[in-house]
Length: 250
Image 1 (tube, rainbow, N blue to C red):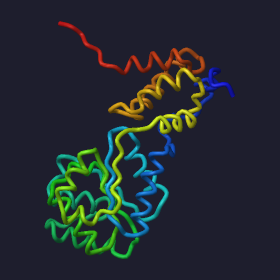
Image 2: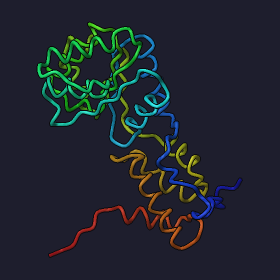
Image 3: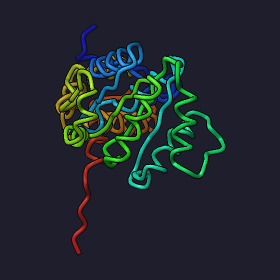
Image 4: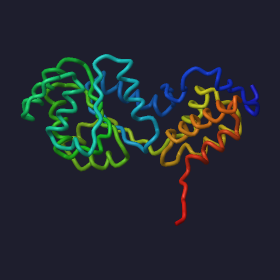
């Protein structure tokens, strides 16, 4: 098919939002391979990268398609040891969390021991050194696999913790999304117009990566829906422009 001719079905003929569906981009496949290796061998791995490259979607895809996969998302307010353990306990389905951190840790160890499972620690750059160490202890005492996933500074934080960094196998560091990742999304979304693909592809390596591209496509889809027309390059360009910063002078 000539990609200069857009064959994207009219929005009214498309079911659901294609940007909300997981797409196995090359980067995501690399992330999943790292996670599957860790789960199979009971290892600790780290995955760090720029925002918007598909890290979280890859973690959740593994959770949806494999047994004994527990997803936790950390933040500034879960940096204490007790809060870190509580997040993991809740992910494991422990409804009554003990009041003492050591009791929580023991329950977690009992729950995951022998499970051949993996605990996915997303946004792990928010953990402090005690949080990292208590998760390492869970691994050491249970054999459960651990995946630390987060922004690029995650790798630097782990490097300053010798007991943890020495246990991490084949750390994965991803600088930015690639053009091949954007192409995989376009194929899945049915975006065939050559100009639209080239226009969006050049932004794949930006700070917001594939996430901003997906937002632009959703906005273009809404515009096309309102006009009752197939998605065109004009919709894509207008949608991207609508997402940029607007400055209103006083």
